[in-house]
Length: 75
Length: 274
Picture 1 (cartoon, rainbow over the protein chains, first blue to last red):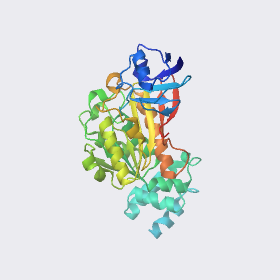
Picture 2: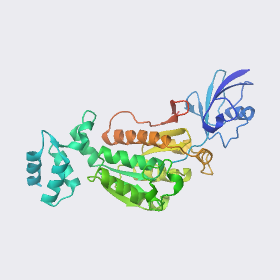
Picture 3: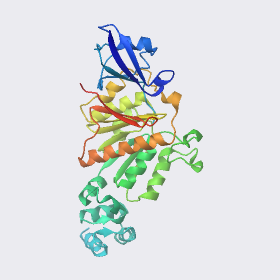
Picture 4: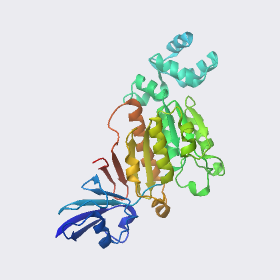
């Protein structure tokens, strides 16, 4: 198993913790982490893997940290 | 103008030019207070209003700021503070772009909104405010909705554009127009306790990456709204970026995004380029 730390921002914290720890099978991608968190791909507008921008298809490794943001567009 | 220079040098207190002298010279020589300001700065004199800037900016820096043009696209929550701060900083020419009039729900956060201004164009209020705080600054008001079609004309002559829009779709059009014109774009956006900041130079596509999966163009600000302090914080960060870009100083947030979380008071920077 791989252990991934997920940091959630803004509205994604509602009903969830600011930091979640998720265990996944090896080979899992960023998209696979959204399901157990009940976050839609649309809500996860912006994803950083270890502080670098990542796509939904990026593969995860044990100990990775993901930061997930909803879209912010107000002015 | 040779006369004006000598006149200003004779009226200065040390190297400071008091506002009353700036106004008197404007009348005596039949030029604007802005033209007097430029002549003073060229002569190495500092208009006295900027004396608390001088440990941060040299008189040459102040002249550079005065000769700069900044376009502010959106004159609401972010834009109001951005225009206020740019005018106080002494950026010589501002282009204020916004199609809207003030409505009651703007009063909780938009600096230029007042009870008396309800129903009045936002750009008109911005222009009135700049005239009150720094008449040497020229403000060009464009009561128009920014889009790809009119963008080049609205931004013409600008050295830097400030994204103070409230629409993701329009932001991406703004980013494209800035790329075409070869001007830097300072992006800010807000929702609730949260905000973000990016400086994008021609050839970069940070904003396109950030908003790449936001097809419907709507962010969480529709759920969260915006309180008074978030636009003030993010607008100030944007003005600091504009100032750095105009003067070629410091390190702008480029190829990266600064994430602002005022609820937990966290500022984090994330790299966009891999």
